Length: 165
Image (cartoon, rainbow, N blue to C red; front, side, top):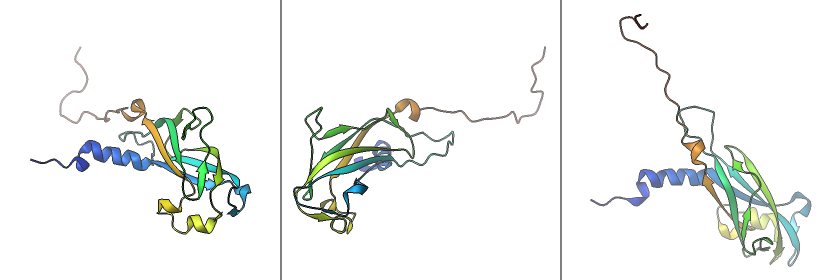
């Protein structure tokens, strides 16, 4: 019997966790609406834990820790390498990323070609229209995820529920 590796419980859980870790890149507000070729600018990278949690005790709590983001160049911009590491990986501030929480990081870039907001945001679904590609990475906080709360049950049988002395 063939098992579809994409539909195993572990694969489906992993896909759900991936959907909870989101990233966005934007130009800092004070940079204007146009970036000229070879111009230096600041990209604001936002990583967001989109998991919706209402403190319902019987659901796992998706909390990420040790959050990093890999920033890749595009046809529009070249990202400065992380000066501490010499590569494209940046550690985001904070110890944990809780549900509905965002963390931001400012990174210097150089425009490869003249770019306007219209060039970039005309079609948000294509990587070729992104200013910088931001790929987040994090560890799942297993202690937060595997907190199990028992169900509150009450005695419903017949007879005396008090111990006999």
